[in-house]
Image 1 (cartoon, rainbow, N blue to C red):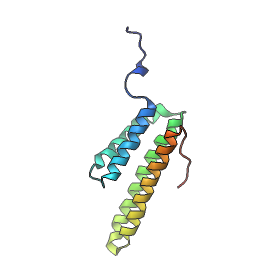
Image 2: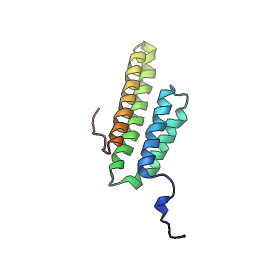
Image 3: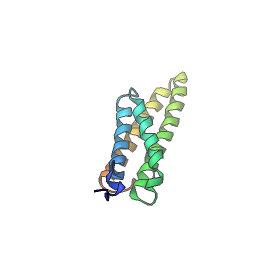
Image 4: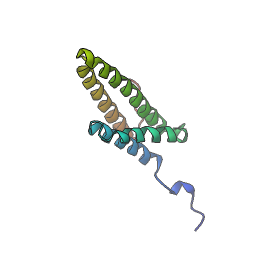
Length: 119
């Protein structure tokens, strides 16, 4: 039975996208306690980016990568803003935005669609 194709080994791209969203969600839901899960989602997204070119999954991988980098930027700016006490509010807004993006992307994935660009 050596004729089995390599595509039967490991997770499908659909399962990998679910895993990326789940890792990202766990990292955020634990308040950064499992921040390594977010990093794992990002690394996995970069590793599988080339495999997803031309598929519906490419949009999800780009969505995850952009959510991470923009979220990191806004959280870092909010951390600086805590010096003048406005950072707590902007940090909360940034966290809500990240959760929204994870939910929107994941729901689109469940529906078999690519997340629409924007917010």
